[in-house]
Picture 1: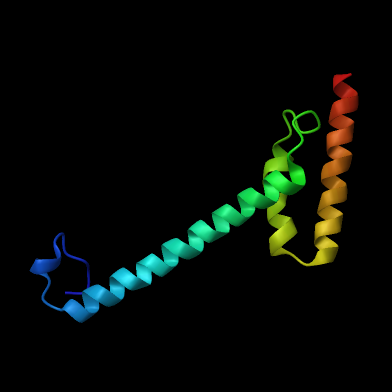
Picture 2: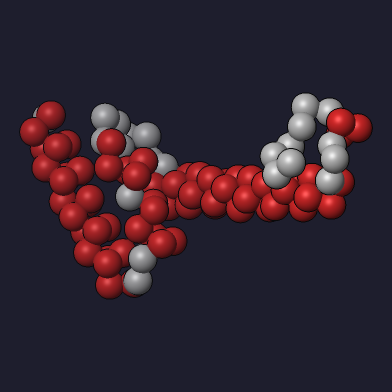
Length: 92
């Protein structure tokens, strides 16, 4: 009764079905919006192919940009930049 049936015409409680469908559409929308925002932040802020070659931190550091306070963002950015510079120096 409280789950979505395979076909809409099988449902016994249409209000519950409509509410569950709408609820899950909202959740999917929030997840997609977050994913697109993080992708955009990565491409705008961190995408530099020469600097970030083999740098796994560049892909995940964008989450600190949007999800943390400004102080943590600066600290994490500095740490990532230092690690990237050290990595590039060791490769040369």
